Image 1 (tube, one colour):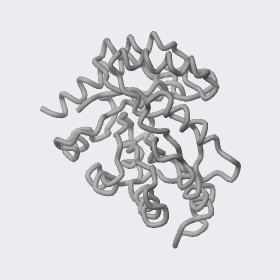
Image 2 (cartoon, helix red, strand yellow):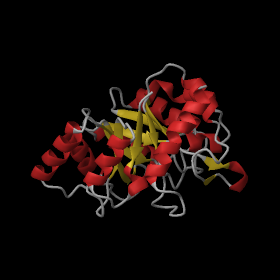
Image 3 (cartoon, helix red, strand yellow):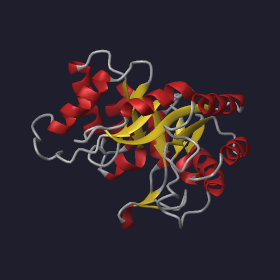
Amino acid sequence: MTLGFSTLGCAGEPLDAVLDLARRHDIAGLELRAADDEFTHVGLTASERRDLRQRIEHAGLEILAINSYVHLCGVEEQPLDAHLELAADLGARGVRVFLRDDQSAARPDGPTPGEFRAMDRVARAPKDVSVLLETHDTHSSGQAIAAFCRLLDAEVPGHSARGIWDAAHTWRTGESPAESLDLLRPWLEFVQIKDSDSRQDFKPVPIGTGDYPIDRLLQALGDSDYPLSLEWERKWHPHLPPLSEALAATRTWLTTAQQ
């Protein structure tokens, strides 16, 4: 299995530092956080985009996702097209989005108004770059994302949506890794990993110190080739160790679980 990481773990760091981290820890893929205070954002010029893509490709890295903060179910207009264009220019697999449906409980027997908006946005999206739906917030479970993807399959044939499995979020909803994988497999693009402590309301903790069942995740994945990506949330939890330490610990965590 290849290992990647999200630049959420080193927010604000320049590209040189990110490439150095990747080189030192034998990283294959990157999730690039897209924000005004990062080196990746929708305001980059054509020249800046070409340079960024060339430097990442020259380092032998793949861009797994441009991590946007688009809320696909949102009432207000969302900058999805601008992020998809950025992803295409950088050669990324797709754009990470959240569904984040404020009306998720309004119609438990069928699609909500927010999900209809999300379907319309996916339908209008270009097909050459994926819309990557993360298991997050109102759609944290594999069951919720799978239900939405089945709806897309039926109503928007040939759509570009795929799934990002944040394995800690689905576990928090009560799904086992095997259950989540079975639900998400038809649309799955890659898997985000991190550790958490279920005794502290699933608080993020240093890798290997929580109780996330990484051994069960790896057993479920078997010999599949889905990339694993460390989502180190140091931007939101500054008490966590630096990303460099987390990457080294992640290698140990994965190796120990596979023995």
